[in-house]
Image 1: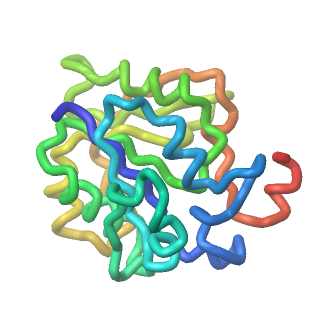
Image 2: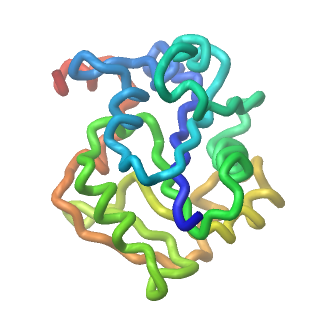
Image 3: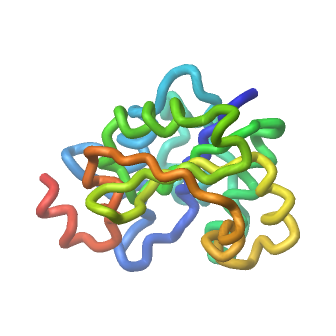
Length: 186
């Protein structure tokens, strides 16, 4: 399997006042927006917590959910759980649920950038000279993360070379963390 998609939706969303996967923008939950923009060809796993899983128990993507039993342990643990749920991928698209406004064309550009020339690299979108999310990481990082799942993900990925992909999508920089941010997006 060449690429797997891991939607990172296990956070408790303390700053948002609810798990971010449940927060709504443009009349739709963050999780539904993110899941809805992914290409049908991709294998998807949604790493979540009990609250989010219960809220989406009847959603069409419910069977794609896996639990992070310790969501407070950080993003690295969720990435590892997602990689273990989709073993054997050469690359993983890591999609934080708090970036629900990313354009589907950006996802296509990132996926299209995977290949021989980017093997073993992180593929990162850039807009206005800044790096954003989602990103693609090589499957080999599972070994690194499994040794140190408690460490911050950006620290664990530090030694992985980066291929930047210029995108016309400012939403890659919009990490929606606070309810006030949602008002400006409606």
